[in-house]
Image (cartoon, rainbow, N blue to C red):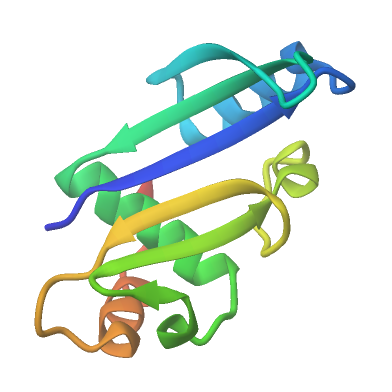
Length: 128
């Protein structure tokens, strides 16, 4: 199974604590925090999650069940990149949008559509 990651960039004008709390509700507590400087020296906070094997599969399933996309449009090489809405995670929802970067590996020689559809069929009780 592949690995997946989530990255959220929090800008100086945003409430970092609220975003972090909402993101933990949505993606779980296992994340790293890194303070960065923006182009003009403004503070930026990067929140990052990394998921392996079963956790990765569960995350992909949650996203595939929530976000309607043509997976082939979001695959470069064997990486799938999909932007999710930071505003939606504030309500513990997953939607296509801006502010949250989801990345996952698509296994070599597997069609992106069948990879995505395979994860859409995972039963809800397996996701808990």
